[in-house]
Length: 247
Image 1 (cartoon, rainbow, N blue to C red):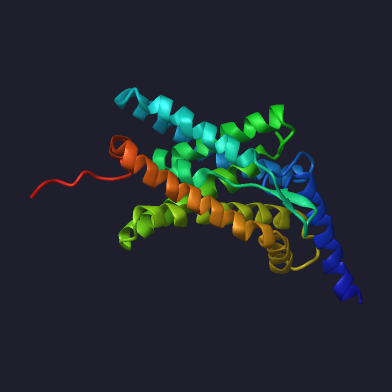
Image 2 (image 1 turned 135 degrees about the horizontal axis):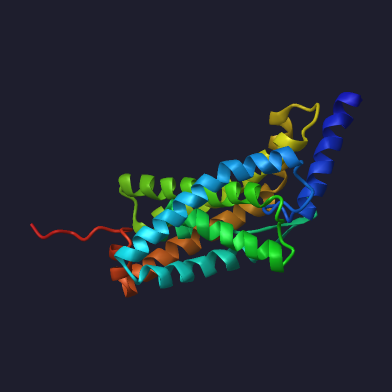
């Protein structure tokens, strides 16, 4: 009986923590100080490189900053939008970093996520300052880079622009959730098997997160197609698409 109740109790505690952390954004006090510091150390080099990238691109193209503001606002709104998760008694959120990584690049997308998470922690009690490093790593680093990689893979496979965006948005969403589940499991699994606890945390959110990631994929793909039809120059200027050179 103890072999059953031990893991069950651990997962219950973790899911209760997820409720306080609003699932995707881990709140104050959930991560021990050592783990919180580790995730800051891992995430900050990506933020620093992203700031360097923004400075370089701003000097090359003055219109980059307004575009950065637009997609930064989009990520902020996306990641604030709560979807109830009945299984866990918590809420789920889109990530938005798949979209920002496509348009701005993955390193700049990390900065966008960092600023969004910082503002949410300061003014919306959403996430936390001590867990900002962990939240930035899962949503900013993992979401941006995996989402961008999915977009590039889709292009190389010859998929249409909508489906490339769909793949990127869906991947960024699911990977962000996996990253957050991993951070919580690593810090709090105790004597229970890490893989088991990680799997149970991650799977508990899937009844809501699977349809949500499909919606985010559709929004990302739809946004790309819309911009391609109405402002293709933006896609060329940002390097999302390359202009075809006449033969």
